[in-house]
Image 1 (cartoon, protein in one colour):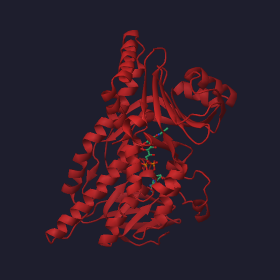
Image 2: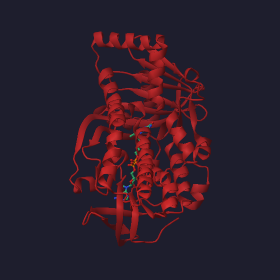
Image 3: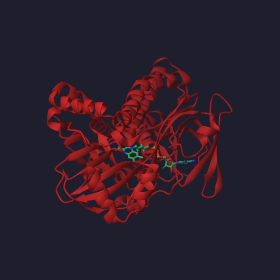
Image 4: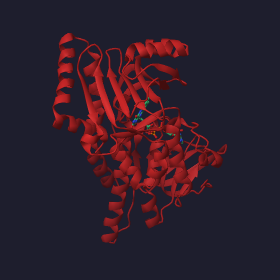
Length: 418
Ligand SMILES: Cc1cc2nc3c(=O)[nH]c(=O)nc-3n(C[C@H](O)[C@H](O)[C@H](O)COP(=O)(O)OP(=O)(O)OC[C@H]3O[C@@H](n4cnc5c(N)ncnc54)[C@H](O)[C@@H]3O)c2cc1C
């Protein structure tokens, strides 16, 4: 529902992208149970009702642009829990097999869904469809007011009880109060900096070129991850003969390749990838995303939580950013539900911004965050080095993976997010 400016909320979520919208939906059962008021503030205009109903895939805000997202098997299970999987699967393309290769060296490994006894290792979904499904869910969320287009410009903590938020809605000043503020703005608003929260940053000085490509052969559910010293290339299965391309390039290469005409670009990716998936016949609109590894040094304070890209932004090589973030979303919803239950059991009033509860949640998230962030970062470092010794060691490793079923199963499980 489109909300009016109700002043005081139990929880305000800043940002209605993949992460903020997912959190609002994950909190619905608790909000209904406790009669909470949640406000989701998004600074882009919402999609029109008629667009949300249509099955077309137009993009409309930064999270829901022309990219596609590889969802791990574990994320499918989360969408089932949220009651959204039936809608999402209309445009979810299964990844049944993954081939990982290292250009210039012999090694390769293959991962198969049958080995895990699941229908798919993961699913590739256009972000525009993810956005539609999430925002359709929000339209039915009784306890959530959506303010869009509205921007929060400052957050203050004048008391231990409530935060004060300032911004604009419909061209007018907006003031909100919230017992808990969730910053899910993708690091786009500057609020993290205003609050003095520092980041650990590693700039890869690279960008990811993203585009949909059409191949001459059907992909039959294969995804490809091809490592090369000048940047990894991933191809993910979409509908028909379409695949989603994610190609990591240095800053100089990006300018050249974004400036090429379609024929030149198709021949550049064919040259880099080779012909195992067929001929690259057509390319759609190209987008470039600068790549950094960012992790906020503080992710909770009293009455404040940072989620999604605001908390951690990672290299997309392993397709793990949203899969990691949604595990943070679900565990936060569970931590709040457990806290509320405990308070009720002890006859106490529950406050969702209690620092010990938020700190405990953050401590529980730390290991998953570190391992996924470092896995993505480590892959880049490992395959960026072109010394022959390392190349042959990688090749042996990849071939070894192909031979060692338990190790391969372990890697597959990591990629599946289970
Ligand atoms: C090239 C690429 C490929 C990727 N592929 C994958 C993949 O295959 N699998 C995977 O798991 N992850 C992938 N990711 C990561 C994934 O895209 C991110 O994890 C996800 O987009 C994070 O969403 P978010 O909601 O945190 O941030 P964002 O997408 O940035 O959304 C933030 C929202 O906040 C709004 N906002 C900003 N400022 C304000 C304000 N002041 N007031 C109100 N609203 C505001 C914005 O309009 C926006 O809607 C990929 C990333 C890239 C760059």
